[in-house]
Length: 254
Image 1 (cartoon, rainbow, N blue to C red):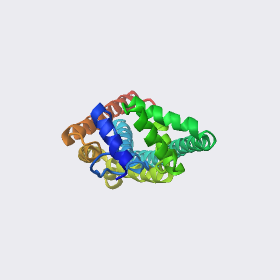
Image 2: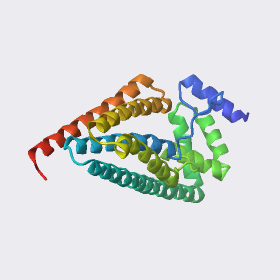
Image 3: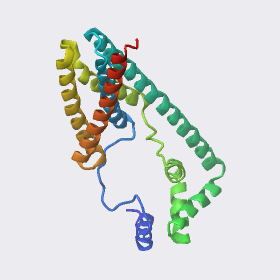
């Protein structure tokens, strides 16, 4: 281990500062590409969106074919919309980060002394002594790649190699939204009437509990709290839209 790293650790430990140079390596899930986030939101949104749409239509007591058509339209329209939204937002974010990284790269090349002093100030603000901060900053600035990574992390809060993957996020969002939206629609693909409505509600409730529990794996929160939250949201959305559909259907509005 280089002496300057050990000294920096010791200095930050004494001053109570925080550092990412931990004495032990920990394994973390790689959520930087955007796929995991898009998948979680995709299946949750697909479930809530289509159970609301299907129950809203069912509340108006239309022919079974109308509910199926509405459910399929909601599935496809929502999946494409989610995928496009994820791709555009992540693409724009990635382009913004790339522009800022290029600007930082040019500043390191044109004004290395100024960037050195910026880094020294960062470590001094964390409680590192001036001499040690200067030693660490010089060591970092001696390697352009490490210098860019460090400035990007300290000033922009990003890593040059982890800017996100728009295509991965879009595909994950499309697939998982489709799965979530398909579940409450299944009973209407093979049946109709009140029986299909009841089965759809049961499937949606079970799926909501499973999705909520799966979400707790990513967040580290209590699985039952996460499951109850997802179930409550899904139930509230379905109940409101069913009531609206029933009211509109009974009123004879076409």
